[in-house]
Image (cartoon, rainbow, N blue to C red; front, side):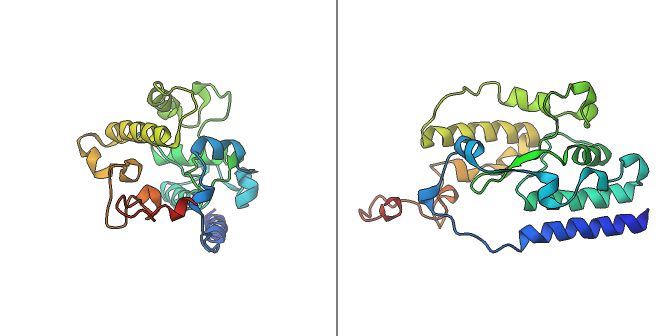
Length: 218
């Protein structure tokens, strides 16, 4: 089994490097779209076909020892991040359940995003909580509660940014408790600026004193 695991790790590494070594593409602020618009209009691909790592290639956790699960989980997480399909948990979950969740759901269809972060879906559509690969650690209830106050409406970019900041602050307060300010999402706060401007604006913040500073909007 260990020989197979080593080959599998090499295959996952190869899939990861395919994305990590792609030439970086310059994105124009003129082409920026909202998260909802990108989710609706971006192309979609089957994750297992895109990466080349299929569910049948991943052995069930019951066949692996603790070290093998750790190795595969670390490699898979790096691969998913490279494909902008981040595997994000809001609560502590044993690695065995994490690995099984990725193994059972890697054939999902994902949105190929350029502007916004994408996330790995942990529950298949229509899956009852009792059969979720995460078991008692299912994250659906967490997100349902987190998004409970979100209203489905058309928002201006400024309103969307304020809503995103509110939701993200709720999330990090729950996840990090008293240490939440260490993880404050400054890039979403329009009132925050560092030496390069606001991170949200990719360093092209507006200087109110410069009347010619609207060049980037033209």
